[in-house]
Image 1: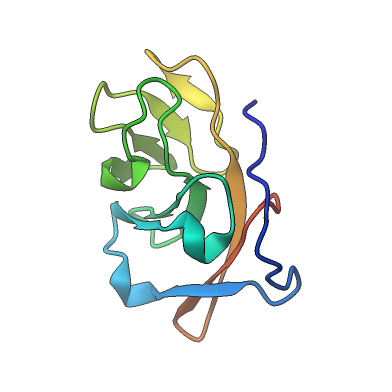
Image 2 (image 1 turned 90 degrees about the vertical axis):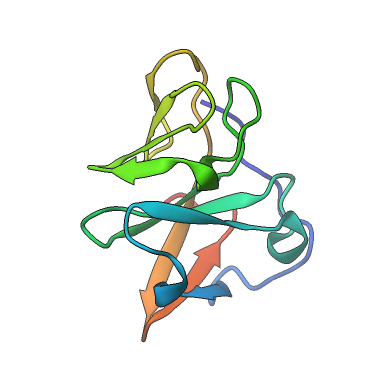
Length: 123
């Protein structure tokens, strides 16, 4: 598994960081949250599955650095738009080649239609 991004900006680990409204993320798609907001080493992809659930993974595909936020989200997986590597939304494990390394998952909560991110915390 890939190493977890480090936090550097001192956000509270108990409240999370409000990063988007739920309506900002269409089902089956994702948005990227800039590392300057999260304090992590990488941008983080917020991904909304076709069942409406929201997940967060490091935004960079471990194969060739494409943005997973630009990928396709369906049935618990995100597919990289560059070479179709697949990652599990729950734990970041690689599920389809050509990527061979997993990506880092982060905890997400949706409260009153707002999405809160807990960088560096496991879901």
